[in-house]
Image (cartoon, rainbow, N blue to C red):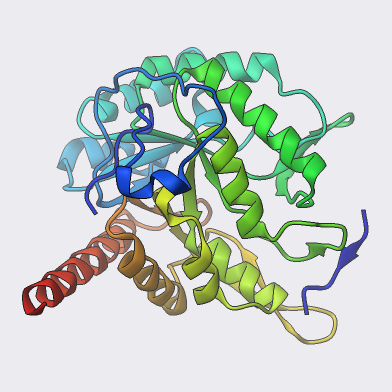
Length: 326
């Protein structure tokens, strides 16, 4: 491949795909049924945080008022040990979402059946309200890469991603959310826009979408396109979760801005504004603060989740005022 410079109401649980009549035209899918099963607890349209070992004891001792927790599936694929003991206790008190980083949905090779089996067992064990994965690949003949790599948006890639998502949903018995990627360059042989590619994946598979607002902004700066227009054109009818995170500002060899998706600092002000723009169009949805490196004190992390909730509440109040005036 050759690279070219790029220069509401609380949603239904992920395991129960319920097309809305007003969006029926947008949700016509291929003739396959999404497997469903009841979930113990849906994810509320509130702010949540990634669960980190540094905060296990604080959470259990203080019982904070937080919307939900999210964990990386691959961190809990062992059979036992302290991580499972803590997660079991926290899961008994809070809604849980599960976020995968290792399925390699976009890889040009079969999915790892052992990994899928471990994922199914984990979902059966903890009954998460949502499960999500990335539109990316991380496996090759040489093994696993410690990164989430982009895919070209072509008919061949589309068919492969659809096949893989169908396999995942059939195996785990519930709907999967697909996350939009962080990108730094564009493939010159792509024949779909990113938005059209993701919309077609959702249409063909019935998967939901996870809209990562930080990814949108990082990619928009790196490839010089309009982030608000991306949100406006995105297939928002399929979005069931939002991610927010921090990025590191760098520069490329020509001195142009280059943003790196680092998840190691607070959400930037411009990403907060883009989040508000998205909520004005989408309505409140479960919103996660991702902070995976240089993990802060619990108080700082929960304050970020509180800010997400405050924005959703303020947008909701504004909508109510407009409705009353109308």
